[in-house]
Amino acid sequence: MSRHSSRDKVRTTGPAGKLAGHGVSGPSQRQLRVAEEIRRVLADIFARVEFRDPELVDARITVTEVRISPDLKHATVFVARLGRSDIEALLPALKRVSSFLRSRLSHMVRLRGVPELHFQPDTALDYAMHVDDLLRDPSVARDLED
Image 1: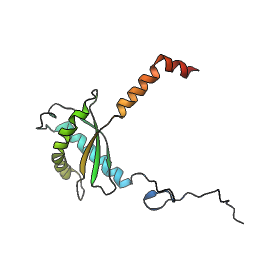
Image 2: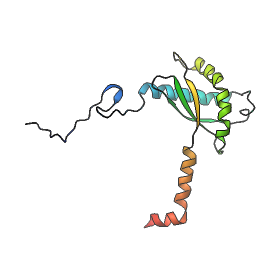
Image 3: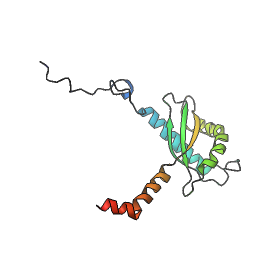
Image 4: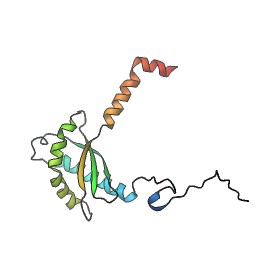
């Protein structure tokens, strides 16, 4: 008789760190390394480069996160403007300069091919501030004390 009942399932991982039978996995170590390198280089470019696009001339853009596809061909770049919530208005301008940014990336990151850049607003800070405001609301604070 087996020491393990049918309820005791051993969790094993398969290819690419997927849990056997679950089909769920996160980004690979390579994806994480490449995404972080792209984030660092883009943040440096945004800090140093003067853009010719009139909408980006005085814009201080922060690259908060980069997520890259498993084939390393597409990168979603999450951007924010600290202290301001108008980043969505700059997304068309960022799309216009994406070929310039890819060109700069190609010189600064060692990859066979530079991924296409897709820009998204990072709303995590706005959401965190909203939750903080809710928690500071007197009626919510009263309920939390109980």
